[in-house]
Every structure is written in C-alpha cells, then in structure tokens.
Length: 334
Image 1 (spheres, rainbow, N blue to C red):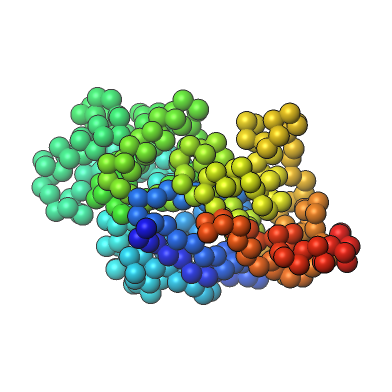
Image 2: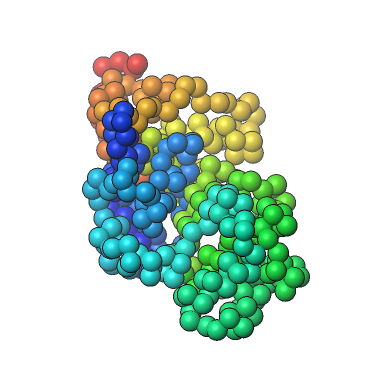
C-alpha cells in the first residue's frame, strides 16, 4: 500500500523552568492511504502531543522538535513555514479535537464558522458557501441543517457540536484526518453515531485516519492497526487481530485486561495497572514500564528494549521477547 504519512524518529520536548520535558521520545510509524491507525495509551503518554506535532499546532517555544522527520506525501513538513502549514491544515490534513465546546467559537453561529472555511479554502461566494455548509451538515447527519446553521454552539448538544466539528474538518476532503479522542465527552449511543459517520466519510472519500484514544472498544471497531504508546515511546504495534488476540508487551496485556469485555481471559476479574507512569522530566534510561512490570528483568532497568518482530506487521519493544531473554532471566528477575 502507498504511504501517505511516514514519521521517522520523531522527538518533541518542552523547555520549562524546571527543565526539559521529553514528551515524545523517538517514535516512528506510517499511515497508508485509506487506512485507520489508532494510537492508544494512558493519559499523559504523549498521544495528543504526537497528533498536534504532526500539524505544527504546538506553541513553539516552549515546545520544539528535538529530532525526526514528518513526511507527508513525501515532503518533510517539519521544515515548512507557518504560511506553508496554513495551506496544508484544513486542506490536506484536518483535525477533530477532543472537546467540541472548547473548539468552536461561542460568539459565532456554527454556520458562519463553517462558511468561513469554505470561502477561504474553496473561494466560493457567500451564497454558494452557505449552501455547501448546509450540505456538509446534512452529510454528518445534523437534522434540520438549514435551521442549525443559524444557531450558536451553546444551543446545540455536545454530540451535535462534534458533528459540526467533523463537518468543518471535512470541508476540503483532506487526505488525512486526525481525530484526538473525538468521542470522550459523548454518551455511548452518540459515540456509536459519530463513529459511524467517520467510517462512512472514510469509505466515500478514502481519507486516512489517525485515531487518538484510550478507549479500546472504539479501537476494535474502527482501526486497521494499533500502536500502543507509553511514556513517550511506542511499546507495540500490529493489526487489530494481532494485538487483541496475542499481545506481546506486558503493558498491552494489562491494558486489555483492565477493560470490560476485552480482558484476555473472560473468567478472570478486571485488573488495574498498579503504580504511575514515569516522570518525563527525568525519563527512565531503560524500559519506561520497568517500575510497573511484574516480569521485569535486570536488563530492563538501564537498557531500552529493541524491536522484536513477531510478523511482518507486528512488533513489540520488550526484552522478554528477545531471542536471548532466557539467558537474561537466569540473571534474575526483579
């Protein structure tokens, strides 16, 4: 398949009075055309920093790209100027943010917010842009679109506001849609409706999707591939069946075991993951999951695990899966 996005060794940090926060620590992944890739993990693991860095939405400073490349359609967009990125954002790459009520301007009618984007990106007159805006709202299943277009965000439910956000994101038929926890504030029924809308849009336009979430149920329903992130690093990657049926990293196994209906052994009780993620002011020198892992070995403390491939599409970063793991274990488990 043809790669639309190819991220290579991306590292993003924040300079603060207390020191450097290494939020993203050397990640590499790709997204193919028409594919949905989910990035999952606990809060604070670097998912949103990753998604925002792809569109240069982080405030710089304090944020800065420490190293790496973000190749979109073969071009390294890290090197693009702000003016050049304005032509890419919304046209080629769009984003649905986590909180629609915070993302929409409360002082502007939703129709005006959609029409502004259409006029700017497609050069249509206001009448044609208004007609296009109504069509966009209808395409995301907003009832009475001709009426909703004249309402303010506070007059709509959160679910309706999220549909407006999807309409804004899809105005120019972008090649890549980044959805940063798009259903967090929604109830289960509305979640299902929003996901159906996203799948329908993808089917019609062949848009690639990066789905940022901590909800593994959504991942199972939406995604082609899953990337498990922890403390700014990728722990495991594979297609849905590989990761859900055969998790190879202890962290992935614990995540799956803590979710109702997804725990590996249905007859076992749900388990929480004891402890807390490491402080990224002073990130660990070895495996970031070392302090919380029941199977940790001495080698894990000071040595970053290498990638071990279990198939062409499935890898994990864990010393337990290394060919020499048995020899290391003889040195004693922690």
